[in-house]
Each structure stands twice: as structure tokens, then as C-alpha cells.
Length: 579
Ligand SMILES: *[C@@H]1O[C@H](CO)[C@@H](O)[C@H](O)[C@H]1NC(C)=O
Ligand SMILES: *[C@@H]1O[C@H](CO)[C@@H](O)[C@H](O)[C@H]1NC(C)=O
Ligand SMILES: *[C@@H]1O[C@H](CO)[C@@H](O)[C@H](O)[C@H]1NC(C)=O
Image (cartoon, rainbow, N blue to C red; front, top):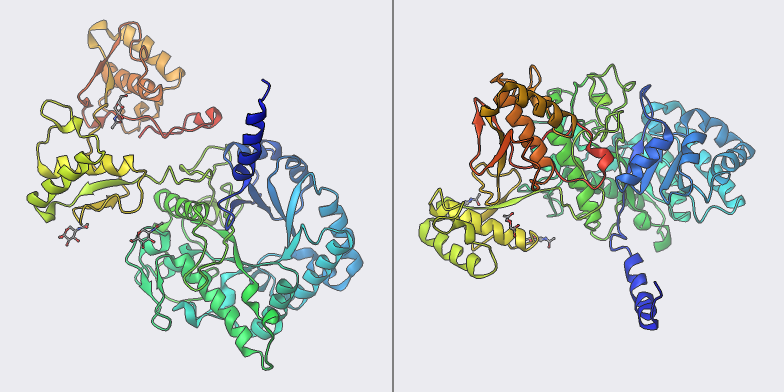
């Protein structure tokens, strides 16, 4: 298609806008750890990253297969000089140069390496190497400069959050005495001089797990919560991650203050930003060791926190973090203008981490090794998967609800389904009708701030309300009259053509009642919902028909929705339970 001159001019005007990233202030990547013997080939992993919109990846080495697979993908890559090589890199600039040449320059720019981590959590995992850390960083940076790569590839080192003490309130944060003056000060000098970043690995999970009695779970997860005040500064904190980052920023401030000569502005550390190289939440497992390893050494007592390791919590934490960064809310209360780059730990569940598969350490993955998601998440931005609903608050009374209901229905809410005779008229209560109208208004306004208030008559919930009425709901059920043989044939067809039949296997939630008609209904309905209730997907040669009242077989309730829609068909393989 030939473009007209006008179109060319318009494209010229629009393209720069399209390529300007509004999320300039933050980007989210993943940690591609490989402490496992069952992970897919790097080439498949790179496809997985691309399918899921993951634009940054951090490695724990410079594996040639991985770096080659990442070539020409546009994915930004952080590589690591492992702790084992740190002493020699510190002692020998020519080793550092050779390392940088064969592990960075050899792949750049086809593989978009943009940072080198020199060592990993050195203070904790190899304290003996602590004195060598800054010299090694200096040599690697000098080597990159020699190769002309120092502007494109930044050098830093991830530190465990145990480097920061007195983390609450955040304003009392300071670096551990044994490293503050001897290591952190020269490191921050180096980072500031080279326009690099301080890298920290804060894990609200471990802080919460040490103090489930003192820390609210919502605050740790980044869910809406009443907030925690730092009485020294008056700053309010609504996320433990923010509090941990600010403890780090305050620790940096203290180092600046502790300099005994007056520092010109350029030598203060206020220009250095703290980025998150690792953060995440386990989806299961038990806590076996390292209880205090990540938490900043906050306590010696307390429970083991294993119960907080759950799919729901991991999903909430990681989605909150991803959505927050992608929405551009990267500042912290103390550093409101700070950028925040984050790498989620980790891409996969790694079966050789920790002490066996039921160790939480082996359960931080976003994906199982077979590349299925452990839970739903979305790196594309917009937070579409953090669903929320608006519901009426019964305690404001019917008069108030009626006024708000009138307002919503008169200002864009679709109230047709709650009229007499329409599918959501029942239950005919003020609170049910108001909830329906408020939620319609809220969803139609894109869940914008302030669109679920109605002068206090409404509030937002993050679990789908039990009584929520879907005016378009329909289900597909088996027709018993066709007989067991035809039902069985249709059942086999549905299960082998995309229906999720896991729930009707022995032990599954819908195995009982163990009848042909119940099992077939389950399978037919799954097929129907997964095909978007399209015409013709509830027939099975006359063995099935559509109903508009929710069917129930014993304790088995047929879902009225398919699984969350994914753009990638490959990710749709079974394992996604219908919801
Ligand atoms: C519901 O309204 C009552 C009375 O106005 C208020 O005290 C309460 O906090 C509200 N509940 C929610 C969840 O907003
Ligand atoms: C939403 O509104 C609340 C209360 O008015 C405010 O504190 C918050 O910053 C707003 N959020 C956004 C993203 O505008
Ligand atoms: C119900 O279906 C109609 C027609 O397809 C659509 O316009 C409407 O938005 C749907 N309502 C809901 C609540 O999904």
C-alpha cells in the first residue's frame, strides 16, 4: 500500500509519540536463574520471554547458549561476573579486560547487554570477598571503558537487604557498621562517578514471614492498606517494599552526612538511585533455612512464615509490583522522583534451589519448568489482570443507595439488566441493584480513581463478589436423554479438543457426582466457555444444550466464564483451570 504524502507526514508526527515510553521511570524484568535440572532450552526460554512481553532479563552468569539465544531480540540483558571470579578480577586488571572482552564485547550489541553485576550478595554469600568487591567493580568498569562500552554497559553489584540495619522506621535505616565506611562509601562514590545504580534485593516476604504478628499482609503484598507512618519524618508508607527502599535511601543519606569534610553537591550520593535486582514471593513450600537471610536481620524469634507462601499471595505481590512499575509510580515517599527498575525473582521454579522441592526457595517462579504459568500475570502494562469490582456499602442505608443508584444509572452505567424481568433484577434489593450499577459505572470508566465512591456508598473489592450477576451468563449442559454411549463419545471429543477435564478426574473437585451426565456437562461447559460461548460450540451432535440458569450437579458448580484470555495460544495448554 502506497502511503499518501499526508499519511507520511502524519506518521512522522505520530511515530515519535509511539516510541516515547511513558514508563520511562521504570521497567520490569525477570531473573533467569538456572539452578535446576529440568528447565527448557535457552532458545525456548527466549520465545517464552517474548510471548509474555518480558523486555529485561538478569542472568547469574554469561552462559554462551543463553547470550546467543537472546541475540537480536531487543531484550535487555544483565550479565554477572560470578563470585568465584571476583578475587582475580580485583587483583588483575588484565583478567577483567579479558573477561569483559569474551563475555560482554563478544555478544554486544546483538545481545543487548546493558549491565554487569560484579558478584552477587557478596556480603552474605562470600563475606571473605568483601574487601575485593569495589576493586573488582572498578577493574571491570575500566575494562568496559577500554572496550568503548562503558556508556552502554553499567557496572554494579546486587546487595542483600541485610546490608541495611534499623530498617523501621525507614528514616533510621543505615548500613551495617562493618561495611558502611569501608565498602559502601567507596562503592557509592564509584556508582555516582560512573552513572550507575545501587542494586538491592529486598524481599518483603521474608520480613513479613519473620513478623507476621507485627506486619500486615496487605502492606507486605502491596495491596490497599491503611498505611504505616514513619513518626520521624511524617511520611506514610503503603508498601513494605517502599519502606525497604527508603531505609536504603536513608542509609545512603547517612553516609553522605557522615563525611567529615564538607562535600560539594556532586559528591553527595543523592544522584545514585536504588534499583531492585531481586524481589519476589514464593507460591508454596516450607521455610527450611535462611530465615533471617533476606529480612534485614530484624528478629530472632517469630514464626516460620510458611503459610504466607501461597499462589494467591505470590500472584498478588508480583502483579502489584509489575503493575506499579509499569504505571510509572516508581518513586518512594522519601525519593518521590526516583526511577524504579525491578527484576522479579524468578522466571522459573528452580528444583535444585534450597533443600528439595518443598523448600520455598524452589518455589519463587512465575513459570513451572514446563513453561506453564504458576499463576496469571501480565508484563504488558495496564494492570488489566488485577481485577477489581465496585460494590455498594449496605450500611449507608437505602435512601443513600437509591440516590447513588439514580446517579450511576443517569451517568453512563448500564442498568438495563436490573430492570423488572431482566436477568439481574433478582435479588430485588437496593444493595444488589446498587452494586450492579456502581460496578457498571466503575468498569465503564476504566476503574479510574474516584469512580467507585458515590459519596461513600461504594467501595472497591479485589475478589469477585459472590453475588455478582452476569446478565450474559449461559452454560452448556448435557442432555441425559441421548443415553450414556453418545454422552461418552461427546465427552471424549470435548476433553480432547480443549475442554479442561481435570476437575472430573478421580480426586478432582467435580469427580462427584460420578455420573455420565454430570461429567459430560462439566466437559461440554468448559468447551463452550473456552470457545467464548460461540454459536455451535454447545451442540455435540444434539447431546448438549445452552441454559441460562446456573446448573449444579451435587457440589459441582459449573463455571460461567472461561479462563482469563491470553493472547498466546501456546500458553493455553491445559493446566489453566476454568474460573
Ligand atoms: C460503609 O459505610 C459505613 C458508614 O458510612 C462506614 O463506616 C464503613 O467504613 C463503610 N465500609 C466500607 C468498606 O467502606
Ligand atoms: C487516587 O485518589 C487517592 C485519593 O484521592 C489519591 O491519594 C491517589 O494518589 C490517587 N491515585 C492516582 C493514581 O491518581
Ligand atoms: C452483555 O452482552 C452485550 C451484547 O453482547 C454487551 O453489549 C454487554 O456489554 C454485555 N454485558 C456484560 C455485563 O458483559
